[in-house]
Image 1 (tube, one colour):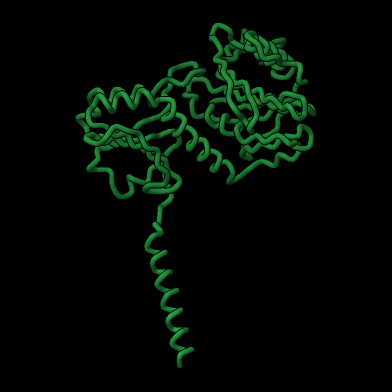
Image 2 (cartoon, one colour):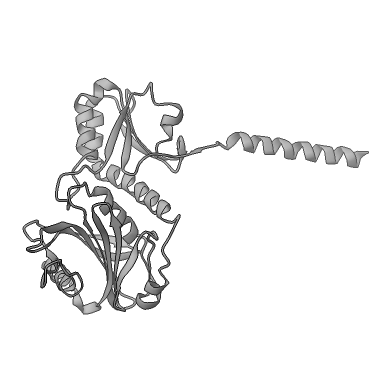
Length: 326
C-alpha cells in the first residue's frame, strides 16, 4: 500500500512540474514581413514631429554605392493603440515610449520568432532624439543582421550544388539554384542569375597573398585588380569593350570581418564604356592567412531603370555565407 501511495505522489509531482513548465513556455508565431521593412511604433503626433524626423534620418539614410538614392529601410508607422494581434508579428520593430527612464533595449522574439524589437525610452522628446542619434549605427546593424539572416534562410530552401567551387577553390558558398555558373576557369568563377530587366552577378576567385598590401593606397590596388579581372572575363556587347570601375563615382572603402577573417570592403559603380551599361558593385577581399592567399568575392548588378537596393542586398547575403576551407 505504501508503495502504491509513493508511486502516486511521484506521478502527481511530475505532472505538476510538467504543467508549470508548459505555463512558462510561450507559443510564438513565425515572424513575417518583407525584407528591409521596419515597423515603427510611435503615436501620430510624435511621428509628425522631431522624433519622426530623427527616426527617418536614421532608418531611411540612402544606401551608399547605388546610382540613385534608395533608403536603407522602408518604414511603416504604427500607432501604439493599433499595434496588436498579427501586426506585432513583423520581424523588425522599433518602438518608442515616452515618460520612462532614458535608454535603449534590443530584445529578441518578443511577439514572434525570429524577431528583433528595439525599444527606445525617454522622459522627454529630447531624450528619444538623442538616443536615436547616438545609437544610429547600432540600430542599423541590428536590423540589417536579422534581415541578412532572413534572406539567407529563404535562399536555403533551394540551393545550387556548389561542390565544384568547393573542390577547385576550397570555398563553401550558398546561393539559390536560380543562379548558374556562367564561367569556370579553375580558380575563377562567374555566377549569374537572370532577372526581369538584366542580371545579378557574382565573381569568386583567389589571388596570391602578396597581391594586396594594406596601405593608404589599397583602394587603388583593389580597383586595379577588379579592372584587370573585368577586362579578362567580363566582355561588353561591343568588340573590345569590357567591365571597368567608374571612377567618377568615388568608391567607398572600409574594413569588416567575413568568415572570422579580416576583409576589405569596397563599394562603387562599374561601367562598360561606349555600351551604356553600368551599375553598382560590392567587392570583398578576404585575407586567408592560413592558405596564404586572398579570396575575392564580388557582387554586381545590371538592372537598368529599376531600384537596386534589394538586388545588392541579396548578393551581399550570398557572399556572407562564405566559409573558407582550412
